[in-house]
Length: 253
Image (cartoon, rainbow, N blue to C red; front, side, top):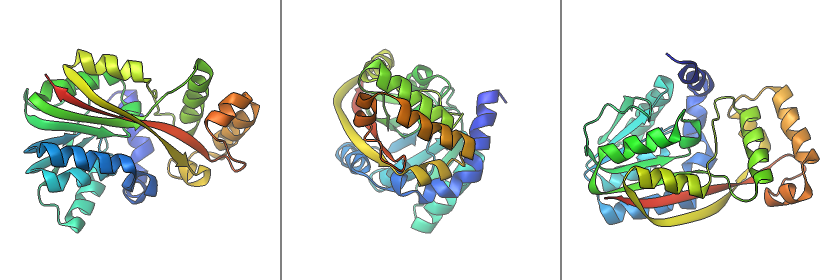
């Protein structure tokens, strides 16, 4: 097991139930957009890459014959299975796997989705390439995550606070980086939607068990960066802030 996989399990395994219960993850207009896209496509088989607490997979289940929720963390998958059973979602199964090396045949799925996951992948482009490989021609992809938007100073701040909060963080990507990865994987982007999501500081750090020293470093950094950066992220007195999230809808060529 490589060091990044171990770090992912250490960070997320003990917090699996917290992610199932998280308000930030269990609701939002992006989830409604996902439901609308899948209701339109009505795919037979759907793959959720990096399912985390399973909310994208749960949203997909009413519109598909079968949904596979995949993740690196066995504890997270166990929590998803438990919640799926509680919801009566008999068409949902789980698979432990890295996004960059999927154990599925070419074209095995009619739709591939991912939400709030790709910033943890060791190689985002490789994960998107795998998504393209396992999506049939004419199938759809819905790719959602926190994103990097604006000048370099905003990007530097965002990556800094993210990795201080969670050392398994790899990168929040720009729209250009996403478009390049999707095109290389054979996807044609049909829509791009940016939104803002308020991150309440106490629950944001508690969900990842951020040590006090790192939480204090985030608060200190928030106060020392430029006024434009603080304004873009709408940093509050308690450390809460707005983060940019992006949703790409695409068709596999």
